[in-house]
Amino acid sequence: MDKVTILVDAQNVYYTTKQAYSCGFDYNRFWQMAASNREVIRAIAYSSDRGDSKQQQFQNILRAIGFEVKLKPYIQRSDGSSKCDWDVGITIDAIESARDSDVVVLVSGDGDFDLLMKKLEKDFGVKTEVYGVPGLTAASLIQSTSKYVAIENDLLLRK
Image 1 (tube, one colour):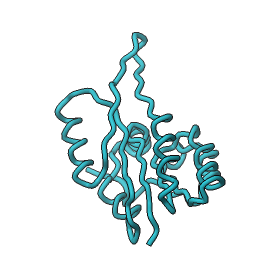
Image 2 (spheres, rainbow, N blue to C red):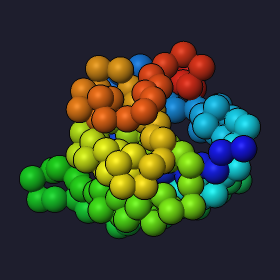
Image 3 (cartoon, rainbow, N blue to C red):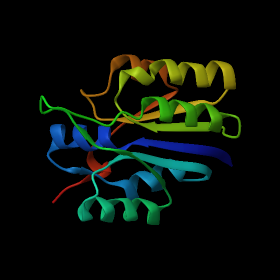
Image 4 (tube, rainbow, N blue to C red):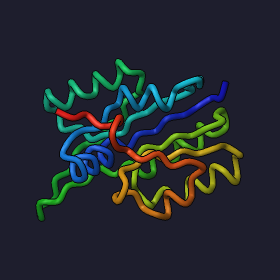
């Protein structure tokens, strides 16, 4: 049984599924797929902390599924844009977890992670999987991973 680490860029998957499909990501179905016939060593969802009750409810759902939830403060800039960047945290956790994992699963479409996927495979000998929304996942990220899984159909929460 493969040992797997699961890392979810929750902000990225929230906005990309909303933009592409006007709906949400099905974390329960994803867990079933990513953890099937595997031993989950570590599962982390990275998100922002706005302190509102709806977001806290979402975080509790993630914890009930089996995720550790890591939060950063939500930063609203004066120009109206916002920021909650977990790239460095995800990278550190992926490299630390690679020592004990056979597979590292990343949920994100962010092309900045292409170097990470290559490093995990080359330096640690782990397989990598990326789950991302088609058309909103960087081609470089798709090309850098052992397996790309499109977020569509069964992985969506339709109303």
